[in-house]
Amino acid sequence: MNKKNTVLIVIIAVLVIIAAILIGNNRYLSTLRGEAADFTVYDTASVTKLFFADKSGNKVLLQRTPEGWNVNNEFKANQSLVNDMLYTLNRMRIKMPVSIKKSDNIVTQMSSTNTKVEVFQMLPRINLFNKIKLFYHEKRSKVFYIGGVTQDNNGTYILKEGGDKVYVVHLHGFRGFISSRFTANPTDWREHIIFNENMGDIASLKLELNDDPDNGFIINENGRYQFSMNRLNGQPVEFDTLRVLNLMSSFKDVRFESFLYDVDASRRDSIINSPFQERLTLTTKDGKSKSVTTYRMRINADLFEYSEEDLNNPDFDKMINSPDHQYALLSENNEFVLIQKFVFGKLLKPADYYSKDYHEEIPQVYFKELETVESR
Image (tube, rainbow, N blue to C red):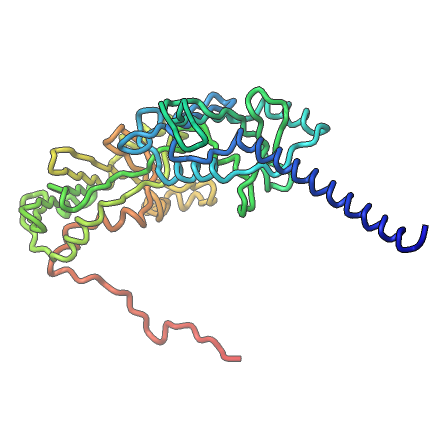
């Protein structure tokens, strides 16, 4: 065999090996793409319900309605979180199958810690070439289990119901894991809206200040962008129109920070039976009223190691009030929540603030008070 034939045979052999690798890889990728259909939802617009259940007994049903998504047919769902979930279902892909050697261990772990996911969609009974679709009906299209995360924290274990092969899934372009998104705690899915009213829909606004009752007020609408303002003792307030308009236009999207279900019942009762700080009541033109009652939130004195002298200080009660947060009781569903003063502070200003004679004090800094920094 001459040298040219040997080289030709070697080249052909290399090409055959490369072709075999490409064909095998293509079959592998095709298999993964096919198996990905067990988990990926390509048409999220057809999703009608999502059900999650975990091993701790938590269950949640998210359902699409003409008014938007709801939680357990009772509460309004956080639309942003629902959108994130639909995006996750649409974009998650199989990264790799788990090896047979590791699969048994992962399945054992998932048997004790997992979240069951059920997806319901409106699908056609007849689908001809994906062109002609007839007789739509609601169908439970996918059922799978979300497990823990991989050691590198960049993947999440997933198992199809009735299957024995575990996969690692991820979001393309996202570095991290997605298991935390599949929460079965109903509270995690609920909307945090307190007020969501346009100024034109508000009939009246009332603010009660427990520590300064004379500075409480009520604002009534008398016409389009026309208001009257009185202190709670009936005394009229000659108000700054721009400030009142700013206040009345601030109720389109007012939210609380979090639910306080972890506060035990006795502690909750103790707080809501203590003197309140402010009570804000908004009434719409259709006669519906919502109110928020705020309470002091105290920091943990032991955690900050206050001394006995501090505890005996008459001003200590003010010292340990949280500067950033308050407890709040919502009239709607009697919910006990945590609010941020940064959000609510602008809604709880006293009547004096809206008076035309009010001038906000601006802190003055004098030259002698400035720190001298030596130049280098």
